[in-house]
Length: 377
Image (tube, rainbow, N blue to C red; front, side, top):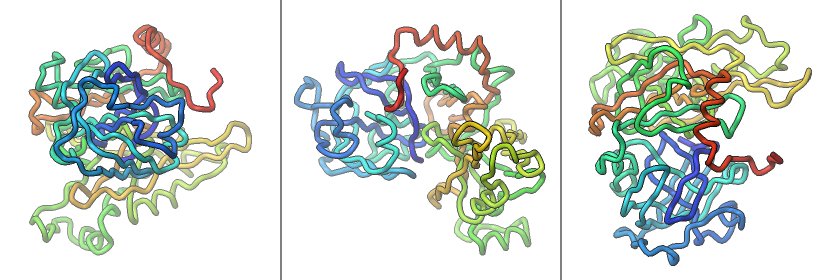
């Protein structure tokens, strides 16, 4: 999944960098002096120089890695070094030194690194992911991390290691089992616009026809009915859909002037997930939550926060729930004892009141504040 937006500052051998924390990827990437053109070569960005590190080691596999995201591509060689991120240290961690960046996202956001938080099955060349290094080192009391996203302040996002803070959510955290420990993917039982169920449109057209005509259809390849997946990715901004479903979403929830949007023209959308008890739970968003406006004022145009991304067939069919979803729901990524089969996702209603803002301000008082490149504050 494509990583988006800022995350918390991190450290690599005493050099601070601003990185993305992405649950939709596993590998670590760091801007390096190997880059001599493009966004990663900009002088104001922190860049890793292996010749300045006493703990640098060449990776056993000296080939070039290339990772494609939905909105960009990163290329570079592997290296090994010690990582110090927040309160944690992971030693002899394999990572990619960014040699080239392609994609508009890297021009818009001053990304200096990506820290993947997904599962070992996704890791390039079988390397140990950062999270698994923390688990092996018993660095935190509970093998979990949580994300909080502000709806209106890019500097108001937070990641919590080893626990949660009740100032940032209300009610109980409900857990959903990860159905395939590759992405943080839980079972998606239904997707609706208004009262119309549209999830079957995720299937290729020929499979969709069979699915509609007889609900007990079995997949030829596995002999099992398809399990639809909701992939929760902190590195993706929007919701995603693919194929016929994406076309249907864009047709039903078309871009319009914000003042003309009503509950009739743009009804609620509903994601139905399956919890650890096997029960279904509905997550409902209204048009003020899933429609985003480009400018302020009477002429403002609102567009649906959906993008087209094709989930790899081996890990689908699925839809991504990105930052727009996570602004509304506080998310906990729990690895249990560390075994991937124990992984589960926790969700609760996020709080954005003055108490939450005050608490976040207190927690981050001594940390650098992220600003967009065009920010003047």
